Length: 223
Ligand code: Z5A
Image (cartoon, rainbow, N blue to C red; front, side):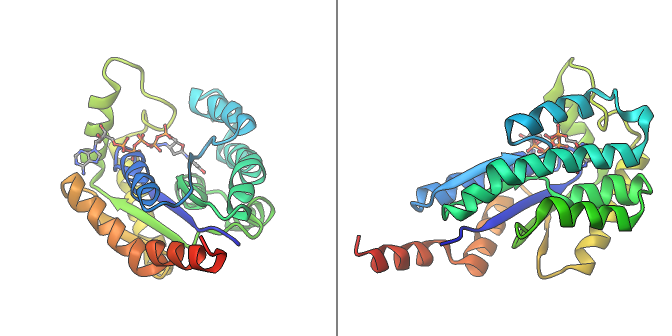
């Protein structure tokens, strides 16, 4: 049996981590085994690469090199965390995945689409997300949330980009969602947390039937 793969995307401070964790908790309380993970990172090797990228030391090497570093991290993450979990019938909820590379490195970093697609083919294999929630908030709202959460700590490689950069990201994410409306669901991230969580949970129930599927699996195994 193969599990399900859901990703969360959006700009800085849009609520991805919050809602990925809330959805994972909902699924767990429905008796489903869930792996909650993130990118860059999510496996020991990929966490090392995360540290390198977010420190900003690779920035002078250019967007193409950063895209390759994100892909190297993804390869490790897919092979060591995502694929084994899906093959074990678990649900995988991932905070950022391929769409982040498409938008940050592809659109904003001007990395050639052929390279981005080539890296996806090599790293993702058959582990494509079935459903992606794109949390949409104006850049200023997301950046203000991230700043207040960060407190006095320094901004990372991407947090320190301009508001214009983050507004362009939002436009690029929306364009991506327009191109793949079946997979990418745009959710207004400005709404109160419980409303956002309810929209996400309703969509998951409608599209992937978590409770029902779980009951069917139990019936089939006679549990
Ligand atoms: N990156 C890339 O360039 N290419 C790639 O292929 C990949 C990533 C995979 C990773 O940063 C960076 O790597 C990312 C893109 C790049 N950079 N940026 N920008 P990260 O993992 O450190 O951070 P992040 O992914 O941007 O997430 P974040 O800053 O942690 O934000 P978030 O997960 O979207 O938000 P949150 O932590 O859930 O919420 C932020 C705050 O808002 C928090 O205090 C919440 O309590 C609050 N919040 C959440 N929802 C609400 C609502 N509805 N109302 C009010 N307040 C709320």
